[in-house]
Amino acid sequence: MTTTQLFAKEGLKGGIILGVCVFVCFILGINFFALLLLAMLLFWIFIFRNPERLPNERVENILLSPCDGKIENIEYIHGGVLLTFRVGIMDVGILRAPLNLNEQITQEKRNGLRLYCFEDDYKERLNSKLFLETSVFSLQITPEIFDAKVYPLSEIKRGDRIGFCKMGILKMKIILNTVELKLNIGDIVRGGETILGYVK
Image (cartoon, rainbow, N blue to C red; front, side, top):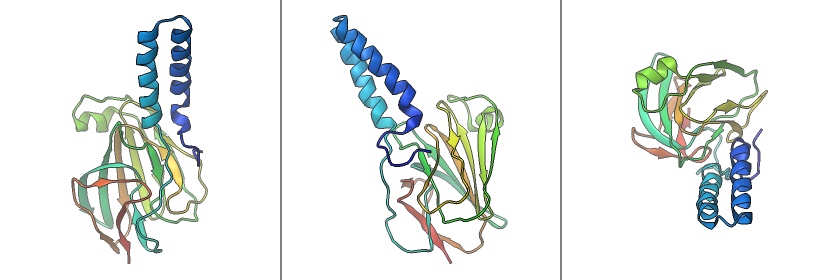
């Protein structure tokens, strides 16, 4: 599980490869490519950063955003609400628990493609998906370029790191009739920090 290190382990392999390439280019005196690869390495470190996050309020009934990104849709459905987030390349990829839970958590992976420059309905039908199910909320993660992960979990506390998604779509279904949302379509959110609403 990605815990408190500053760099998410999901980017470690790529970071090592870029670091080795930078070193080799400097040793061989290919300074232009060395500087270019160094800039790419710094950008890689930035996009796979793993910052600490604290909620904007310290109260027990808050519902936190599970990810960084932009809210693309809010749909009220029978028994709850469905929120759609788009996670971009510059957003932190670490997923965080929106609520405290002490129960069995169901996980499922559905293999598929990783389409990016296609309509959302094609991505919905053809892309791989990860699912996390609890009695209170569920997550559907649709990666578009990078691998997505859900960490092994038995119980979670609000704000805990629960997975990873860099560039993709995350849908969170809140299975509660007593949630007062405090957000709008188009809002920019930060996982583990932005308060989506309050559980009454």
